[in-house]
Length: 404
Image 1 (cartoon, one colour):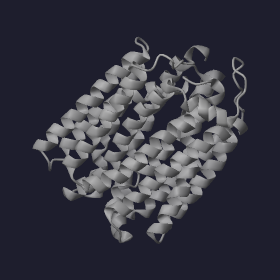
Image 2 (cartoon, one colour):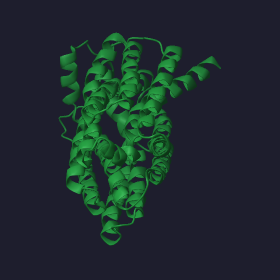
Image 3 (tube, helix red, strand yellow):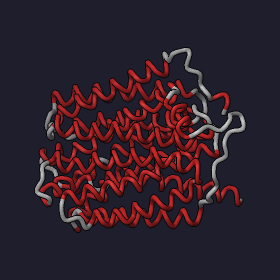
């Protein structure tokens, strides 16, 4: 009974930690047009706060992964979420765009702790197949926050103004801190007995030199870039089509449902089929959704559902890909490098998503057709990564899966 209780407490904690960066990025999405007016800036300038957050998230995860391997997960988590909570309050009190962007950077540095340590905590305790099941349990809840956050943010913006979004995010950070003190022990992960200890520099080199890890990381990054590009540009697309912030928030609910169903489907498939099979199924939906988006918007340019419905298909594919590729990437490296691998996994997707969130505003300017073409290009890049690094990977690339 105690083991079962501890299992559920662990699931709650890692789910909250995994959700924090999504809440920090997605809650204020419906407020972006209002914030551009408040700070008297352009669409591209206010979207810079999104780009800076993702870059800060990437830098944080690169460092946090190695630090948590060295000093233990709990100390790093507490330090990160104290910074996250304080900087969220500062964001709510920013008076200029420059101040806001600086505080968003600090918020990202603190929030990066959650994604890294949550993934590392799972693979600290479970093997590849079990990790897929755990991720498939966590990710539906995390995915639902992608809809809940802008839905809440739309109403907060309408009734209390854009600053209320960041006060709500600060409360979320305090809740996680309380759970960490209550549930998490500061156990320093032990190195694998099958491999001699390596320096952190060698650890980064080993992980980045693993083509299997890079392949899975780029698959995840492609899906993340698609979602983030859609998230940061659609508020301006929907605003151009005449929709208010609270209505915009409702448009993201279908995506969360699709992602949750995809996660649950992945959990069911992994009990019967291999990781490779589930990846093929996920990419099938990923590609079909992209083709439908481009073709539908060429016909229905001013209809929001020309974006929403195909994006739901893409997101269903992401729901299949993310838990499987995450577990496969993490368990393709040596156990003493789980923190480094988790940090690199997050950093790769955040850096690429940061550039995409900046480019999408410059290239699309609130135009639905341009957004669909941008997303289609990202899907193609992800599929090529899958073919070249996973399906037809060089035979000299030796996987460590058997050693873990």
